[in-house]
Length: 179
Image (cartoon, rainbow, N blue to C red; front, top):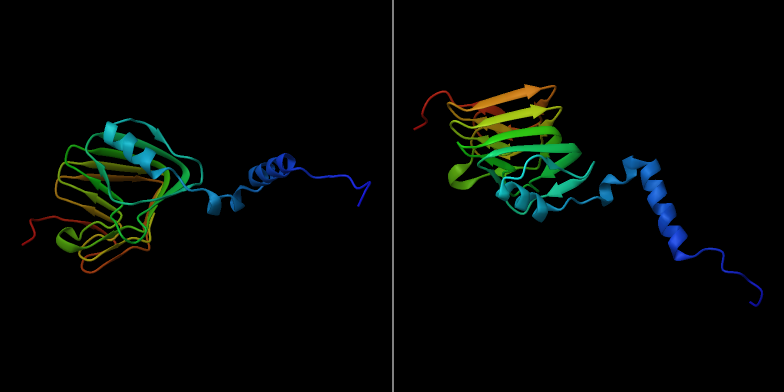
């Protein structure tokens, strides 16, 4: 095999793969996993705004708890509860704004089985801009979003669809104290 030249080296192959993913971003989503630990740390520290990696999926290992004013710029990303966790629990002191983000795969069960995608507690505020809440479930009420009494949800060019709940709706607002 004398005289044969090595015509491809690993570095140009890696560069070619990067160029292909940039040229055809629709194929890059499957490989892109967002840094959930960094997302949790940013939320816990009250850092805002939080800019997610474009078109990545953040597969949660637990519920994201919001207790302050947090803006998440999704850049087309998805936050996925994996069918095991509620995605967001917005406490009464919380004010959550989601921009260009999909909330999916949330599930609430057990003692607090409301709001599979988002539980918006009394006094809290949630605003969705160009975002989607879909594919979430709750054993009780509000598969996609449960908005408690005195809480506020605002949807701007956003959708809540394809969510299921054991009792009241894929999106639900409680209007009176439940027994």
